[in-house]
Image (cartoon, rainbow, N blue to C red):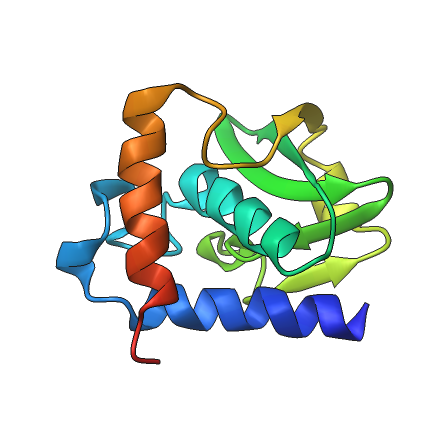
Length: 135
């Protein structure tokens, strides 16, 4: 799991280092309000890095939604620190009581091409910009 955490941390660093004008609006205040698109992009990245496919999980708590990756019981999350009650910028864990509070359900495979051509174009452009980030 250490290597998986390094890969997730690296991808988060790349997002942070990407010029905001190269990112869609959903990622310009990363990690705030970015969990949906960031999760899809991270899923794409981890699959390409050889970590296999993850599912996109979506949950609700107190009227707020949150998205993260999950494969079996392994949770990967690079945006949980947008919430006041969570400080870690990157979560890679076999279990997470914090995520359990969202009562998330697996929606679909986490890739940038799951929502059609327009979303694929927007996320694809963002993905290229992130991978080419100077950070």
